[in-house]
Length: 78
Image (tube, rainbow, N blue to C red; front, side, top):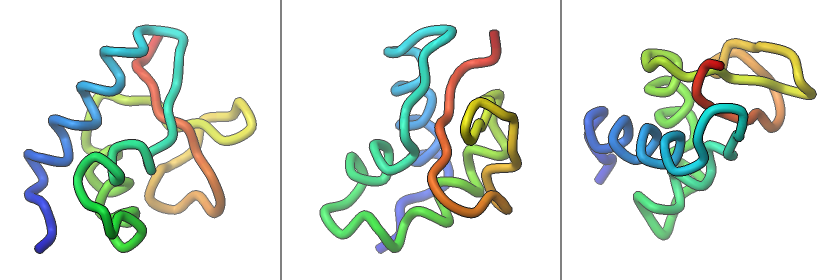
């Protein structure tokens, strides 16, 4: 069963606040907290991340978490 958007958002924001401003995390960390079978959740995690007050980066550049190809990092805006 896919977690709700609220459950995904809670985990994403929890991870972001644990790290603090200026630090990032991989969206897979959130997916792993939500399910042992976490890989299928990645599109949902990225979709929800795009709706939150989080910054997505890839190689230091801002990207759209939904359309970016390859690994991204998420963090609080600074």
